[in-house]
Length: 286
Image 1 (cartoon, one colour):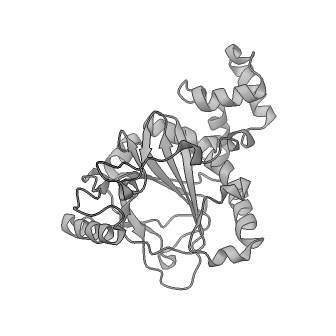
Image 2: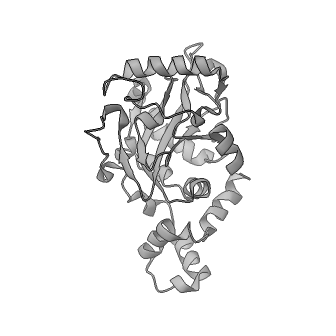
């Protein structure tokens, strides 16, 4: 897993998110609120729909990211899409950068089976190994995003990297490196392409926005604006918490809320992964 991710800059994980969660997202976000089908993207709707925030703190996803990065993942943004975006090529790192670099990733989840006609995600394997092209490296003024997109497309043409497409099944997820060049491919019809992206930083970094920054004016991101930690408690029911404390006798003095905090803040790094094993057994092999 690590070797493939480091080589290609992405991983496709089959059946990561169960249908029960996906169907709940579709029902709450679109069926009950059909006006949302007309929005190109819905940013940070965890503020309105708990199921979105809970998925961002899903222990199976967090454990997988911890295995890849050996740091605690911090979900900081969600994006929901009803249709393909046809978004131009870019690296997420121009929007969301960490110090040290590359400690950020995206998790793109298919909420339905995705075909080429729907305008799937397009990405360029190995492009994460290119230089990080911030505005200064491209001789652009902060905020000039159109020129940034022009330059990135020129670089991809020059590098002659062949694209891949996110043709994946409902519940599958594509995890990509902060510097992987990607975008939205052309839609070939008026078809939906229901999907969701969760962006993650990792613990122990500074977080900033290169697009709007200059060497003398770094625009930092406020940790208080990230997805609220309250969702971590919605993911774990009482039975799992009690089992966690039962399995690890050194934790039996913790109350239930303290035990949940321990799992997210220490359990992953200490390989206390019973919750992940529960999810893994129900989601299929990674």
